[in-house]
Length: 84
Image (cartoon, rainbow, N blue to C red; front, top):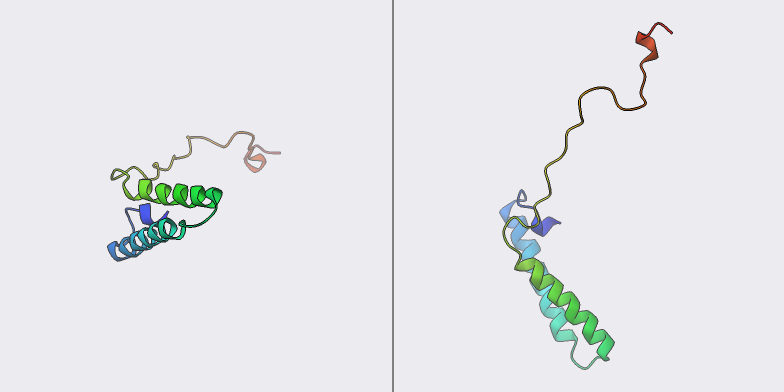
């Protein structure tokens, strides 16, 4: 989430992105000579990181928060103001 947070400080984004690139490269390099299942998992993880790094700008932005609708919440009653 940090690497996709457009509100994070540029220096923080730079470090998070660099770390993801480092992990992607390490996954690719460490797959050599392993059993095929391990190679497949490491390649998949490296490809997932690559897709994340190459995503379009704004693709990972969180949606805007919804505001509560007007009125009292469903099921709530204010008995103090009803004379009970």
